[in-house]
Length: 153
Image (cartoon, rainbow, N blue to C red; front, side, top):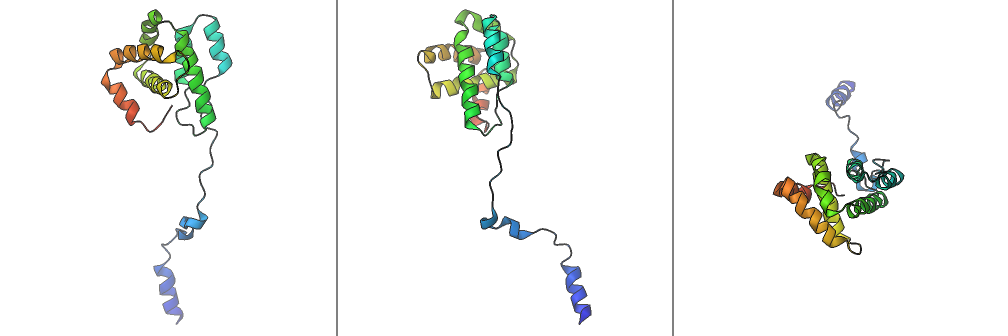
């Protein structure tokens, strides 16, 4: 009889997964991690006050909290980005865009679409100019990448 028990134990020794952890009653949502915190508002304001609009744009796009799940952080970053975009005049846009790589241009396009979703007074016309300039540089591919990306700005 002990021989049968040994065979049974040997036959189930490979089962090291605790299947009870996948029970619906034991499911726990993932804890939100610290993740990206977004751009520093003081740094952005300093760059804008110094007239370094291109550097402010590059900084706000490079520090975008795209992987963050905290909506307050994302909204704060969107507001800062809109502030930077609206501070850049239409005749300065081209020189700002030349300094950005493809990934940052895609992030900029994300923020342009977010600005269309949640407009502030007087922003829509300015964002349309931004959209046209970005489209002329990045083409249709940027729009497709933004609309198909699961990480929202």
